[in-house]
Length: 104
Image (cartoon, rainbow, N blue to C red; front, top):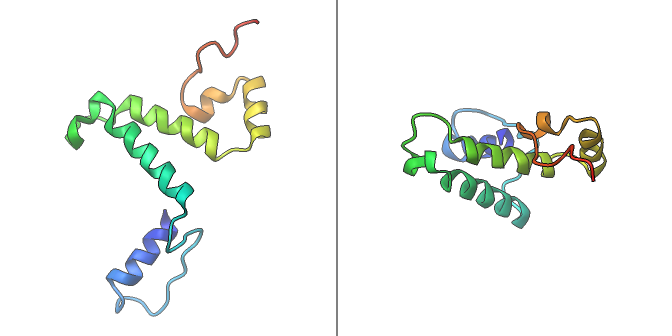
């Protein structure tokens, strides 16, 4: 998001700086980015603790769901497989997936 914020600053405050260097950003989101951001917003807004944005503490269900999305989208399949075998998926997503360590 820092790269996108840099683009916004360039547009909002063109006289503030001579040059700006956005890192890992794009002035136009891909359809994948838009879908991911919409899903993240739906996760937050569907949490009862969201309360229309007037929450007193972070919405835990929505944030846990977003952590799961990030564990899925920001890691490779090989990394997720290794984390599952090593019992580290809790660290990636913030919670223990149900049935992960049950014998089959």
